[in-house]
Length: 109
Image (cartoon, rainbow, N blue to C red; front, side, top):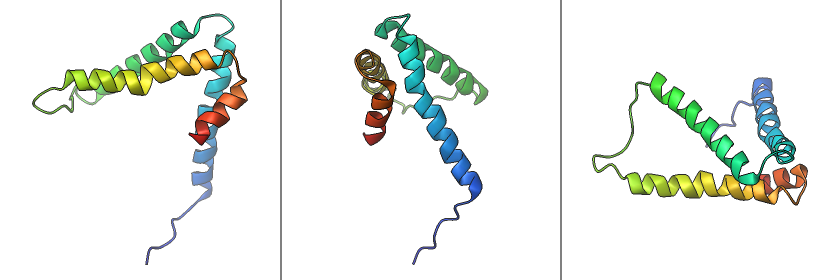
């Protein structure tokens, strides 16, 4: 029989922080869409994430976890389907709905 997990106040604070950070993203997107197009907003988000990821990659010694065959095509397809296209569609959709609706919809997915 499994024991119950130890849920501490620190755990609840971490969940609240995650919800605040993740949820506020939709508000920031809505505000940003007043000044730039969905394409450039998605491009900016992806570029920022790429810079941050590159910095972390460098701090970890520039190790790259691909097999010996180096499946670059598969990596590009995953990047497009899991990041580029969803960010673009989310930015496009938020032109027509509220940030609250977008956040709740994404949370339900």
